[in-house]
Length: 221
Image 1: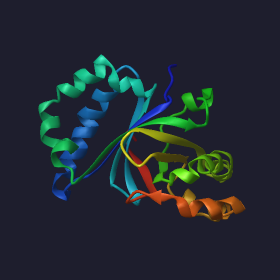
Image 2: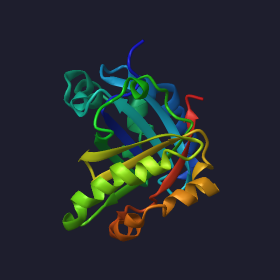
Image 3: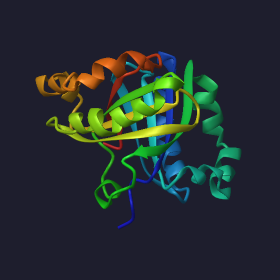
Image 4: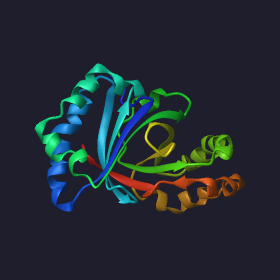
């Protein structure tokens, strides 16, 4: 069986007018997700809705690598949108539209376990920047203390970190959860300030609007 996860992500967030959500969701579920997943290098994908933070709608695509989005196959489908895409896609109707491409920075390599895993039932996502003068220390802390501590919490499948290739802010943290309440429990809260280093580093983090956010998978179910 082929890999389901790679070393890059395409993340598309959107808010759409309430009166257009039904058609937006049908377009995504009936046409668009499958169209994108037919492109070589798109390994898996799913749609999510925010239960905390935002934007409301998220399409998360696992890619072999960021170069997939430079391929002839992807450029061809991107350059030839369907009539339904022109009418109901986020570039036409969204009030918020964010399309970011990321490459994995933690863990350092893709393990067989990660590569074989399915899209998670829920995600917690942080999108952030830090000042240049703390960037190196921030990344060491996040990779060696912060993510590993949270991975001890029951219900956390894993945590991965990414740097933006396209879009802002610079960093994305993606926690895969078994359910959307994981980060509300006592075990998660106990790890939040478990290290004294955290109190020094966290004040430098500048989150994007709506971040951190929690999402539940809506399609495929």
